[in-house]
Length: 71
Image: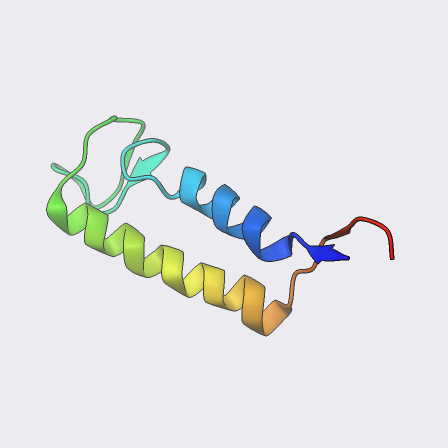
C-alpha cells in the first residue's frame, strides 16, 4: 500500500498558500490583500513559514494518511 496523504496535503497547501493567488500576507498597502496576483520577498518568506508549519502539523501531528493500492 502506498501512503498518499503527505503528497496530497503538500500539494493542496502549496496551491492555496501561493502568495498573491488567494491572499498575500503582508500585502503592499494592507496587512492582508486578497486576489491581487502580485508578491514580494517578505510575502514569499511569510508564506513559506506558514506552509512549513501547516505541513508539519497535518503530516506529523495529525497524521493524515490516504492509502491506495492493494495489499
